[in-house]
Amino acid sequence: MKISEFKLERYFAEHEFNAPYLLCCSDCESLLVKDLLALEENGMADFQNLWLGYTESLGHPDLREAISKLYTHISPDQVLVHSGAEEAIFNFMNVVLEPDDHIIVHEPGYQSLTEVAQSIGCRVTRWVADPDRDWRLDLNFLKDNIEPKTRAVVVNCPHNPTGYLMSRKEFEALIDLSRKHGFLIFSDEVYRLLEYVPDTRLPALCDRDERGVSLGVMSKSFGLAGLRIGWIACRNKDLMEKMASFKDYTTICNSAPSEYLATIALKNKVPIVRRNLDIITENLSGLRAFFDRHQDRFRWVSPQAGPIAFPRWLGKGTVEEFCRDLLEKTGVLLLPGTLYQGNFQHFRIGFGRKNLAECMAQLEAYLDIR
Image (tube, rainbow, N blue to C red; front, side):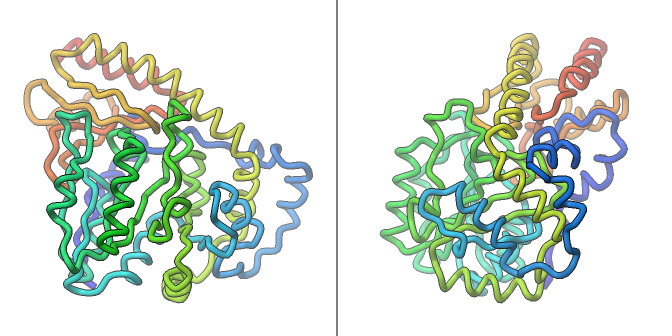
């Protein structure tokens, strides 16, 4: 396999653990182990007595049971646990796709959603959201680009990095096209549960249609990136069996402590997600005020869900130059849109953590002297 360098991850490898002010994080505020264990009766004692042998390759039964409760029509045997979302993406693409297959991918997006398919020898059509229409997807573009060999359509909703949320009408139209043409829908749903208005939450694709493959992870909505626990939920038995077999060549099984802690978090999902939404809501209010004050330098499209947005840089120079200069002079890390396919003159800003005000103060002081 020949695969291109992962630009976004290389950028974070260089800067994430050196920059004092992280203003582009895609996850929510995390928890300490002791605080998570405190949510479970006898949690600390059970954790200390946890057996550190191999775990089940499909995921611990208790964990798969807890994950299945995030859905309406999914049973524990329709859940396959992975080491984070990245492994799940890699395994899905390698199981489903053959050289010269065609896929259509929602962009801007996480590079592996296109890169893994390309490394297999697939043709990729980029379904680019329209920044002038608040990042909406054009379903007519999708219809016009479906081919006989279109094997899958990849969508990410709620969307990273824009915070876009597909309407129910658009969602149902996508499913109708899948049924008509026979392609799978790989649905990256890692920000599901973080919709600002609960009534706008879409059903999980795996609940709505048997062609739907739903991706979930503990990193984003739950803020527990260090657990490295992700999963696929799907009602296609043949696909799930093939993915389970392929996983024998990647991680085989997951970390026992991570599976135990993830199970506790999922059993206590209501207070954890509510806490993260409270942080997001408070921070979003401050961000809106900031971008109102600086309309000459930024175009701000307010997100509908999640802890991230993708403003456009309107100031002098390129967005890459702006982000580099900001980092060098203040230690504030933003993610330039040039790291995504399409060379966007936008940047990702993250607002799921408690220190947003401190980071924004540094950014505003920089703008005052620039």
